[in-house]
Length: 422
Image 1 (cartoon, helix red, strand yellow):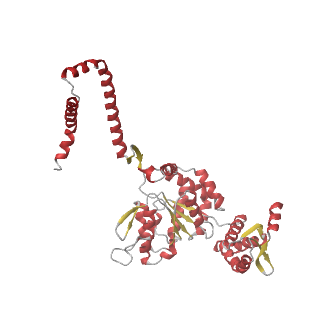
Image 2 (cartoon, rainbow, N blue to C red):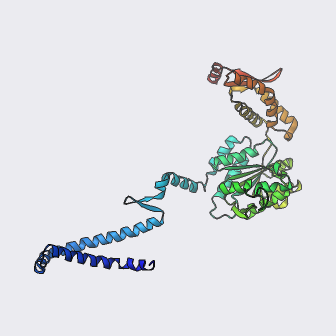
Image 3 (cartoon, rainbow, N blue to C red):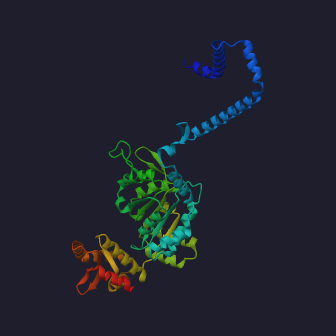
């Protein structure tokens, strides 16, 4: 029976002609029309035959064109509804918004390096050269149409508290990419690789993906931040080699290959800071020699050669000094006070406190950062901040006096006068 259906479909036009002929004959008999009468009517309508034939031909051609267009549209995902063709995207979602997202994704393959560098310089203090260099690198690498490796594998090296982690977070924010942040100090044991790449099938935990593989599966264009990479166990680092060299990483639970070709890997490290700073200052205008000597300095400090060979660029951060250090300290204090639900009034951070930060940094060298002092400041003023919030205060000022650092409540009137004085 099923084999007869195609044949019946092909014979359908012939059957329609036979049906129309029989229907016409039956109508003529019912109306008592004679053959002579029919002949007279046919002869009388003779002048209209060309017009009728032309109209029927046009209708047939229009039907053919409409049928062909309908078939093409249906193959592209359109649906007939109420006699009209409706795009399934228009029916089920906001097609215009989706088209805007696709257009934005295509535009983002070529970024404005100057605009990105300016945005990064405005937020990462004291590292202008690094911001400019990494913006240029991202522009070149994102513009590549064919790429079998990640967009980039960048190492940010330098003293602690100079903005390495913050720069990585800002790159994710400014390029509108998701951030996958991993503290590699927690990956120092031989079994830590299972946290990142999943557990082999048959072991407890194999039903879930690893943190890295699962993250890249859901967010393939993420910025992957590996903080303090030198603290990771060598076995964990080896797992990254295929991700950086071959453009994919293997999920251990099911051996699925997950692409890394759209991701940006940013590594941070605090080792060999003095040697790297000296090399960066001495060879600032010779990037090839600077990279060679930097790689050698990191190798002597204990970095695995196979890891260094897969790093695209090494960016050296300089220790903060002078007003740059004061700027970072002021921002850290402001963020700390904001975390208590309060705000710093304009000009509300005592200059003497920031000067103390600068003096302490000069005594300790690269061994300390502005964050270290901010933590000690928080210990001193946290109680007064809690009291200020309980009293309904909205703004405070941080004052350094004989009894240490305290947070004083600033009235709205005082804050308004301070803003007007400026």
